Figure 1 (cartoon, rainbow, N blue to C red):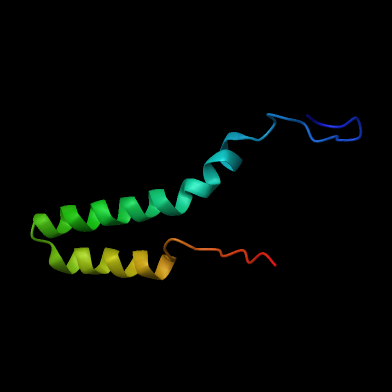
Figure 2: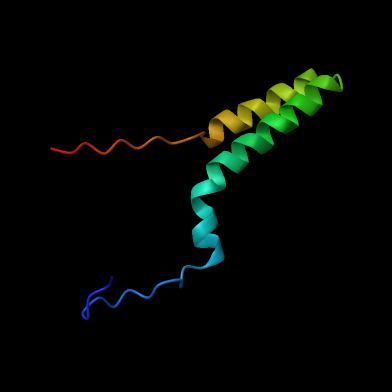
Length: 68
């Protein structure tokens, strides 16, 4: 329960702010699906190029919080 001095509004997070944590996963899935479709249709060079762009764009970032 928020205290009387807590001025954080609940439920005011915008849609893009709520979707932002999912962006790396959606991007990774889109790149993998594109590479798979290109590879299955015989476009190995294009599939390799898309895979290279996907790797260069990043991937899933893992953050570790150490508690003491």
